Image 1 (cartoon, rainbow, N blue to C red):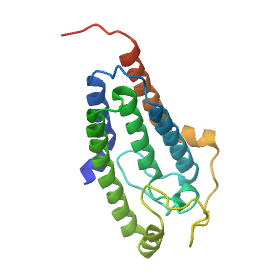
Image 2 (cartoon, rainbow, N blue to C red; image 1 turned 120 degrees about the vertical axis):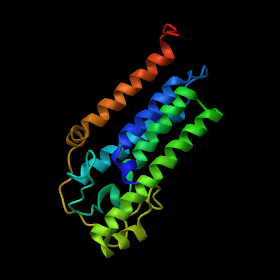
Image 3 (cartoon, rainbow, N blue to C red; image 1 turned 45 degrees about the horizontal axis):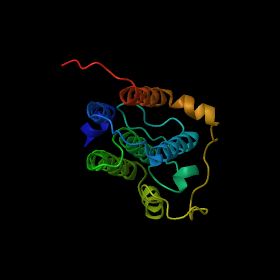
Image 4 (cartoon, one colour; image 1 turned 90 degrees about the vertical axis):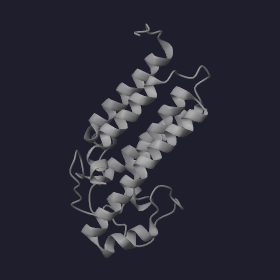
Amino acid sequence: MNVLYRFRGVILGIFAVALWAFPHSSEWIPASAGILALLGIVLRVEARRVIGEHTRGNEKAAPELVMWGIYAKLRHPLYLSNLCFCYAFVLFHLGWQTLSFAFAMGVTLFVFPLAKTEDVFLKKKFGERFVNWANRTPMFFPTSFSAAQGECTSSGVKRSVLASVLADRWTWVWLIFYTLLLFVRRFVELPVLL
């Protein structure tokens, strides 16, 4: 499982290249692609506003258990953000067809075990505190938008939106780059190389 975590960016890149290799749908771009992309943006920014300096790259790091902000509603907003972006890219490129569901299932089957691995890591590091938080906080989908019960107090300062975007700048660069690739694939006639 650590191999999946260590190479998560590469694996998502392979999904992206595989998606790009398929011909785009000739249908209209579904509005759901835009909605999912916007949701992905909101989730990522809100998570980065409260998470502080946590895991980046190949090493897992969690100096504190973040249970406030969006983390009071769901345990894995960054993974959910990744899923939203992946689903948005699939729908933008392929539309609503059977192949879209295959890509979505593949990405989901990759991201879900990553989230479970992170839960195991956090449980080992924070013990009962994590267990209590995990028992009341769903992995991906909030059950309520009201104030969460139990210990969810802020232990840090919420970053500005700009600071949270800058903290995740390379993710944004890759997302913009891939979006542009999909636009080129859809709207520019490329010569056939083979």
